[in-house]
Length: 193
Image 1 (cartoon, one colour):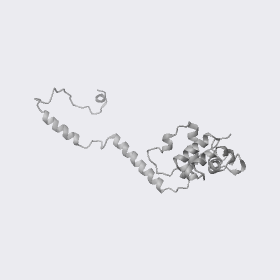
Image 2 (tube, helix red, strand yellow; image 1 turned 90 degrees about the horizontal axis):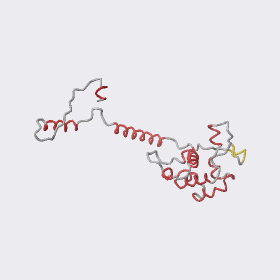
Image 3 (cartoon, one colour; image 1 turned 90 degrees about the vertical axis):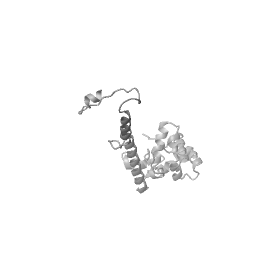
Image 4 (cartoon, helix red, strand yellow; image 1 turned 180 degrees about the vertical axis):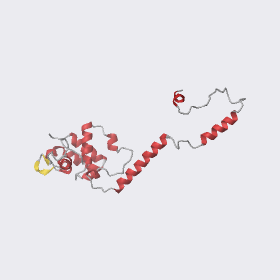
């Protein structure tokens, strides 16, 4: 009733209850018309669900195209080795650690972590040197592979990659799991005020 009351074009339709199909005058004709109407294309062109699914598919298609055409030179390129998809990578689906460890792992893998290399580009008022040596730029690679402040936990990374390959550590499920464990057992990629 509310739709009828607010419509700018009031309808002249009537609804009646019919006890059954047999013996009702015009029922066969009504069935034929109903089947014909059901087979027609919807007047709005498509369903809302179809429109949303189509828009989502087109967005992903363009995202994958951009990903394939882009230069893989950013700090995140080592960890973003597969084209975009709707499905989270296994590491993200199966991670069971705490939120801080997870966020620091993601930040480190993308190159947007609490390290001097990032600060020098995006937060220049913060120091960019490593606390282990004031003359050394603190980079993600330095923290993961050579900083003496985290040596006590580096064996965790070596168990995943004996050569401490950044490609492996940042670009694989096993590598990211090792980085997360390394972060849990050290102060790596934490902000030091």
